[in-house]
Each structure stands twice: as C-alpha cells, then as structure tokens.
Length: 288
Figure 1: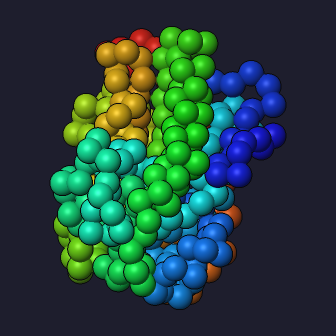
Figure 2 (figure 1 turned 180 degrees about the horizontal axis):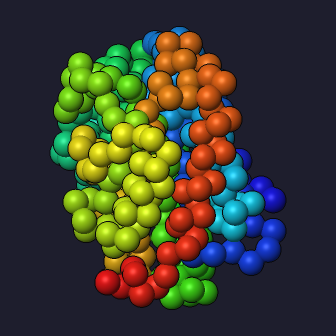
C-alpha cells in the first residue's frame, strides 16, 4: 500500500515488517512546469541527474516485508541526499540565511541541495532563483521526506532493536568528466558504507555475497562511499546501519534515451534475493 505526500510515497508492507527500510531518493520523475520553464535545458537533458527506474528495481520491497520511501520530485529540483541547506549563493537573487552551508565541496561542484548543474556539468537555470523559492522547496519537499524516513528507521529500530537502511541509487556506466573516475568503465554494483562507519560488515557481506553469487562485479566505496543519507543516519553503535547501493545503468536501461531494457524485469527479480539476505540478518551479526 502506497501512502505519502505529493513529494514522496511510502510503500508499506501489508503485514508485519522486518528491520529493513529501502529508500529511492533520486528516481523521481515528476518535473514541475515552473521548473521546466525556468530551466535553460530541455526536459531530456534535465534527466541526466535522475536515477531512472531505481524505484522499479526495488519495487518488491513492501511485498518482502520492508517499507520503501521514494521521492516523486527529481534530484535536479531538490536533492535529499544532501544537507538541508547546502546552497550556492551565486544561484540566488539575494543573500541566503546565515545558517546555509555555502562552502561544502558539493556546493562548489554545483551539486548542492538545489543543484546548479546536472550530472554532466550543464547549467540548469537560465536566470537566478529567488531565495524564497529555494527555501520553499526545502520546507515543502526535503524536510517531509527526511521526517518520514527518520520515522521509518525509528519504527524498525524500536520493533527489532536495530534497523538497516538501503539507500538505492544508479550510476552512469562510465565515469563522467566531473567524477573521480573519468572515462573508466564501472563495476556492476558499488556498495558504500562511508568506509566502514555507516554499517556493520555483515550488511555489506550479505549484499555483496548475493550479488556476486548472481555473477555481478561488485566493488566497495570507490568512487561512491555514500552521501548525506549514509553518513547522517548510519549509527551502528545505536543499532542503525546504512548501506548505499549504486547500480550500473547499462545493466537495465538505455542511458542515451532513458528507456528501460528488457533486463530491468530480471534484475528487479534478482533484487528479491538481496532482500531475502538482508531480512535474514540477525542482531548478533550486526553487533559483531
């Protein structure tokens, strides 16, 4: 059963759930008309930052006993895998509040909470945004998403003594000019745990073992070790474990035309094995 606000949806298990939560923060594809009008890019170019169809790859989560929260708005509009106020002052028509983080590496790269560029480096906006518009997006979309994500995590932890959050993403098959691995072919899956700080090794081992057993090439923390969600919520000492999964887009979609490949359905089925392995994790393994 899917419930939620206009900004995000939550797919909840119909019966008793387990200790695992799934999140798809970047697969939203509802582009507001005013956003399209303000952009210097065409609608297809705006999708370059989108983790296309990732929500479909993990659509079985609720059936397998795990809630999944999925943003409906696009990453290019608001990026919930950032701090709430990572904002570039050059994008706005007036001074930002003093509490904004205007100097983070992500802001400097143009990829703050409200991005200046899409993933390939093209500027999004034809002019400056009003400060009120930027802050409104955060209040209206970012904060409700994280409020509900936090509640899902807390509910699992209170019910089971621990919670495991899987933050689901996709990546271009080849590193782009702004990435740490330009021009290099990437693995099938990259697992990020903030270099061991965000989850117990048992979580990584469960996912990596399932994927390698299916014949996929899996790497760990390079070039993606996890973003804000991984580092903010990952508190293994408090029983909250977070793992970011990056899926190579070439496995399941046409990267040029943003179209599903027939393999998408097969991979979505394979993700059930990943979910089964995660559901089987025991508290004692997570405490090790």
